Image (cartoon, rainbow, N blue to C red; front, top):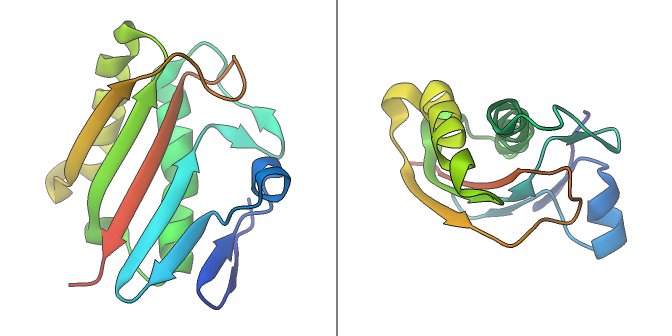
Length: 131
């Protein structure tokens, strides 16, 4: 996925950004605030049925936006994730630990009734801050 930065906004060209009128990320001072990311790549949901792999893909997309905003994985201070089934907390949590290791950002996990596409099992938001 190719990210494009236009001033204080980062766009990935994802189908939902244009359809729903939002940016992949917003740069606000020393912060990069990334919208919710799923495992949708080139308009297709990847890793259908696998919450762990969907989470890894979503974080890859989110971290690409963080990088476009001038920050890195080490600058991430907050992760919020939304799962549609109780059993997905552990696989998604494991993916977060895998990606962030010793960074140890603050984190909130919430179970929701559903996401925009029923094949999506997880959505992840990330905030990064320049120290």
